[in-house]
Length: 318
View 1 (cartoon, rainbow, N blue to C red):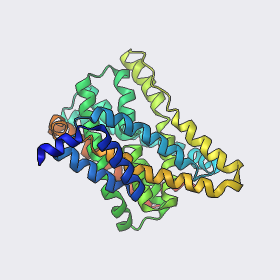
View 2: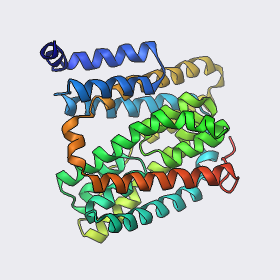
View 3: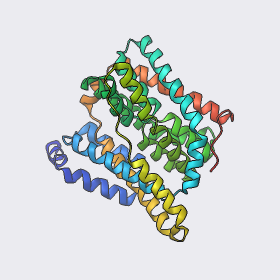
View 4: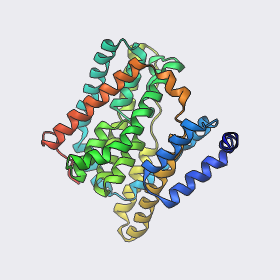
């Protein structure tokens, strides 16, 4: 039976068709992630490289589709009002990460990658920073595995934690954007919590994603690699979709449908992402980088939740 399952997972269409079916029947990204992770950790995914590339493309397309559910003027207002929070939180997270790395004796390059992934947007930030600081492939792989693991945990535990803390949708959206690593899980967790949470979380997280460019530039100058991070063009698509909704209000029902499609796509996307989780990958992590990343994430999560709940950091106006 196990051999049969392995043979099935060796067919790329198994992954694509399952992702499509999950997208059609559910808009709960946590379900997709859980199913993918179970398959990846038990049977394994021999096509992880291919499904990983596809998940990245689907995530970008899903984010663009979600843009149809928002007005451009609202997106810009939320994005601009959250800039200072973004700047401070990214700086504080990276600095704290480097301090923790010294305490846990984590190698400098690995510490930079984990800190950047936690501060900005998970795997995308790590992929952009790695060539900028001349990180080895093994260091990049470990950083990706650590952030991916915590990112998956966040998607599952954040919505119930938000309910337990009696957060409003706006508060949860801001919290998830500040405290969850990757855009995929930010969007997934916020979608579970509510539509307003999704709007704020997506906008604030994409605002943070723009900081990949300057951070990678600074990294390149410090490490003298002169490598430039690629521009995240799907952000332009997201803004274009929001602009269309604003200038063509008569097509509101069509745009709502597009946004709903984006939400459903996240389920299939997270399934493919979950399928990339493997036992060999987890074994590579090591206890010190994991503890460093876990503590950094816990501090960021607790501090941002406290600041938001007590009104010190306010939710951007929609």
